[in-house]
Length: 376
Image 1 (cartoon, rainbow, N blue to C red):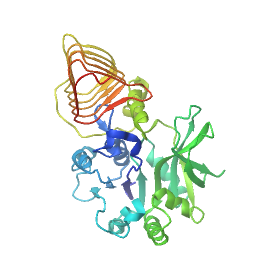
Image 2: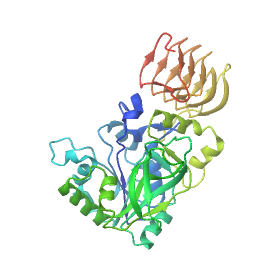
Image 3: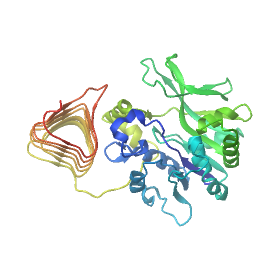
Image 4: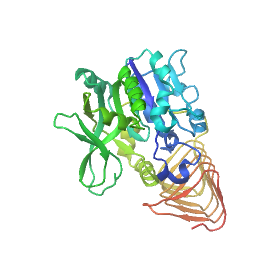
């Protein structure tokens, strides 16, 4: 797949993430105690030989720049190729009203200069580990113009409402792309990923801007589906679709199941991330833990159950943390209670404070806040 250019697009549906995305993009949401969502997309690409990757992080670029750096963890700190980070167009550019289509066209000279013949596009909020070699071979063997990746879901509880739904003809070619409204208990979910010939991608960008009939690449593909061979590749492995606070919370909590954790991090291709050297977690005299994941650098002297602790978390004596996500460098004070909550980076919950949410609607404490008094 060295002839393939990777493109990591934006995630535009940030409104349902609340305060978690006030200062970061969805792709930079912490996950699994030490990772970010984008780590999956970057690792998938580099594990299958894609060595030139263009990232469009959107307006909240600072956390992306800090995390990605030179790309060293993904072997992308190269003299040639590597990572290309494209900030959003902020001038009065005539293409701005066309959304991401305008963003991609603003860097069209980059696409034209690149030596790759194909592109692999992915949105980083959907965590999957497809065999990209197999998918790419299918794309080439079928001589398709575009190959979309999807999975088939049983969804009797309607947990995946408003996700992207792909409708296929009997031969697997694209009929339409739409939204899942829960009218069917089983449906095909588009994974926000596709292979396309690079020259075609450029041509479609130009055609779309001239007609002004689309603002996303999905709409662009939909508009041209009858003129092109757009087929599909079915993925059947582990999957998490991070689209709101509830799905983000549940995706992290699922990792407390050993089988789920192994599927994400121990089976198949490895997931890489930015490394930080810190001492091992310390369990002090009054520490009581059950079914937790903790990163390095934590200090635990309270009761922690069914929870995830990111790097450098401090759980003080008498504190109770249950069914919660505690992010990097946060501090839970003495005798404080945190249940069914997402505590963002650098939060301080002072002594004796009680925070209680629910599994369906976890209590979210925004980055850097200091919680005093009883907030329950």
